Length: 294
Image: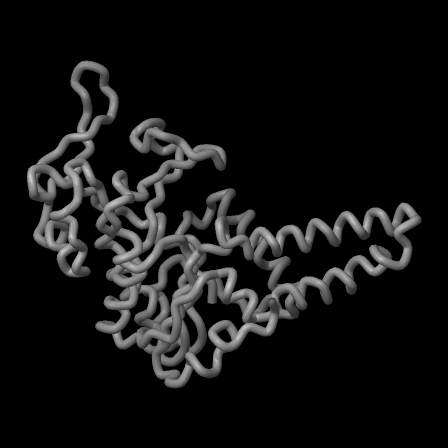
C-alpha cells in the first residue's frame, strides 16, 4: 500500500507513480499487489501488518519558530510589510502553551543561551505519527531524516536554528522570499518522535545513522555484487569500449553508495526504527545488529 497525498491528476504524482511501478517491478512485485491511496485514513485502524516508511518527510512538516528575548521565548510570526508588500518577521507572544513549553519538556537549558538564539518547534510531528501509524497492528515504523535528539539539536552553538530554504537544489538564505517557489525544511527532533510514539504504543527499536544502518545491512557487498551482475566487463574487458563503459558505470554505482555512507552528508541522516507488536526487534533486525560491511 502506497500513500501519496498529492493531487491524483498532478503530473509530479503521475511521474512518481510510474517510476515506483518500474522500480517495484524490478524487485519482482506484481502490479496487482500495489495499492495507491490518497489518505492514510482510508486504511481501517489496525488493518495493516508491515512497515511504515518515511524518507525526508518529517523535516517538511510545518514548524513554529521561537527566539529568546530578555529571558523569555517569543514566537516569530510572518507579517506583510505595508510599505513594500513583502513578507517580514514579527516577534510576539508564543501562540500556545505547547509552543512556549516545548523546549522545557525536553529539558533544554535555553534560558542560559544568548538573546537572539532561535529554535524550531514542530508540533505537527505527533499528529502525523498518530494518523500514519493508526492502521499498523503489528510491524515497524522506519523514519529516515536529518536531525538529532533534542539535546543534540537545541544547542547553544546553533544560534539560528535549522530552518532552511532550498531553491533549485541550492541553499537559499531567505526563507520568506519566493513563497511557493522554494522548499522550507528544519531538522527533526527525534526525541519528540520517540516520546510521541511511546504514547501511541510504539516502542523504540533503535536510533542510528544512515551510514551505520546501511553498513550493517551490507550495502557495499550488495553494490559490488550488483555491479558484477550489471557490468561484468568492467574488470575483464577494460581494454575494450564495452569494458570502459562498464567500468564507468560501476564507478558511478559505487560512488552513489559512498555518497549515501558519507558521515558528513547523507550518511549522517538519522534512522529511527519503532515497533508495535514485535518485541525483541533490536536483536533481530539486520540494520541494528553488528556491522557486516566495513
